[in-house]
Image: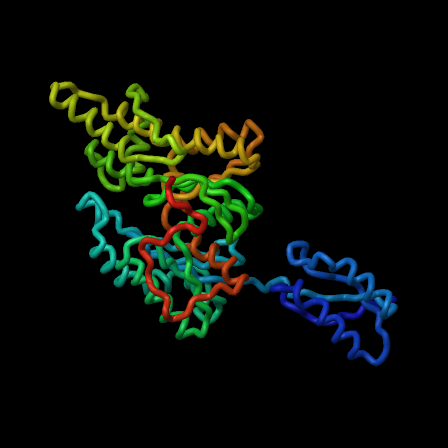
Length: 409
């Protein structure tokens, strides 16, 4: 038997197109020509593909060759401007970073001890076009090469969000490309797919970003069940506020982490887990402030390193204890971490020790824990595949919640 090439098909949505394509090709032949089956990659293979091949082979007394265009991929340009980082990235198929550019404003806001929204917005305006151009340049692509434009539309600072949303809408309109509106919180979760390309739902995610703290059951790429969350401050906010009391510069999280490694957790603070299973960081912050003020009034000198270590343990132990309880109850086999506090060395160390108990622990690369556009492009890929596109009426939503989040009990 000889082989014959039927045609070339891009592998996008191959499971929807293969049957129709093969039948059209075969019926267009006057005589029966031998073919050999060579179908899509396993990830794209239709679940009835093998059965279909067998029927075709019998019906046409032939073998089928189907040549795939394996180079076809979905390339998305992501844009992130929710706080004080202007970021753009190009990501292929939601898993592979082609370029990732982050322009931080830390040096600007350090002078004020925190982010000044108006200053952040003005700096986004000045930087966003250059950052996007750099991301495309580093990816060796032109704007015409991308398949969609993705942008964070919430949650975050409204002025900062509007810069990114306005720019993305204009760019998508000018290029005639789809616009994908991404939830910043969902983007943090998707940062795990960039570090672990084989990771797929379901799994349990510990969300520890600057403005959000929660334990989330990730059911699917588009389905989340928030088990518990903070009722006041997020863990990232608590780190920044305690750092300021300790006289550490902004941003406080990395500074406390560094200082805590030099001290011991000699001071005992109450648990951040509330009676109903949620989290509260406002009381922990106040307890640290009272400890320092009382010592100052008595003329006592406390070790800042010991205070930092004690605070770190109190802030993170409750999170991890609650996480372990949820894993045991749900029977989950995989745990992932998302958000800026996911870079904390104490948290990462404790989680890594859980791997010895038969649990898979996914920790994003340090560069992907903070705000970045690669995670936004990754989240957008799954929305793109599901045709979840936005139109030009898209607006910023500074108080956007994670889907599946419930009112506090």
